Image (tube, rainbow, N blue to C red; front, side):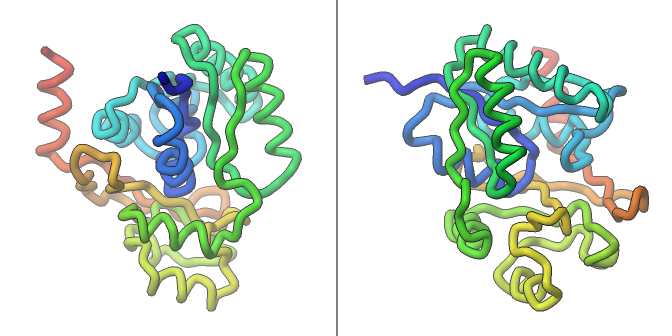
Length: 230
């Protein structure tokens, strides 16, 4: 019996990755939906370069559906991206949301408008248990953005680990960063064809957040460029 075809709303971080890991046995996941800024230079949710998202897609064997937008045009752009996923055969869309009823209602409304059935495999669960499950399943991620209200720039680039989560919890930070305290970028998981090595760049501070510029290592960029030319 064939599995239903699905897309994953992909931030590039641990929560979307865990949602994918949970959904993978039951769905034929074929593409990821990722939103970028208007210039297409950074992902809207985690500020990742498009090369990083492309490296994720390459390792997962997924196609990418993306849109560029401002925050004011995000809803319309996201709706168009979901519509494109439906046109490409998807019946379901998987989200990595955990809390906030209003956001869930928003995603479900946009999914329904695109003719997709939303799936929320992480919804309402303990964030401490979820981040531990991500690590226990072999997920690996690094901290890419922190809110300066909670954390300083020394956390940037640090690998997520049980020790790091213990330290974050002691600082009254939600284990999954559900209040916006931090965001991650996934560097490995059991579904990746190979680990992703990222090279650190400059650190910037903007709108009360510190962020580190990460890009795939030179060898990975060369591999991706060669594949694109074939």
